[in-house]
Image (cartoon, rainbow, N blue to C red; front, side):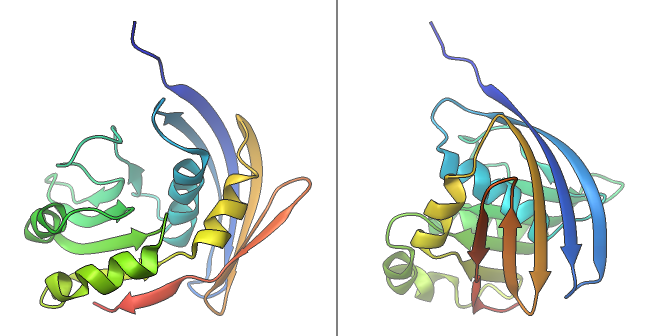
Length: 179
């Protein structure tokens, strides 16, 4: 028998001083049985980093042809494709061919090493931005995952602070490749 996804309800208060974006979002996310708390929280963090009224979550963690987060225009064409983790070059190439802008958020086990081994494959992709999240920071972020969350996310001078009722987690994203 297949396991069902777990539903998470999140009230996300964003204060992004860098982009002058201040808004509350009520999010409902399905956590796939194979998804870790770390990946779930990285999805929420990424939403906060690029929050927009048109930003949506992808449907399936295992879909290579679908982004983790995205913005489409009124015709359905991709304006923004956000991929998470350490995907293959094939997935990123496909995303770069389909979308105006692609953002790759790398995290997980040894993301610096993964980037070192793969950066040459991504150099010529002019519409690709790559951001690194450090393992210890995303591991700390995973500790605040809960089925119902009230989170405050503050962005200032590139640093992100995620706060729940009991804990604060600081994240310092590192831009490895600019668009």
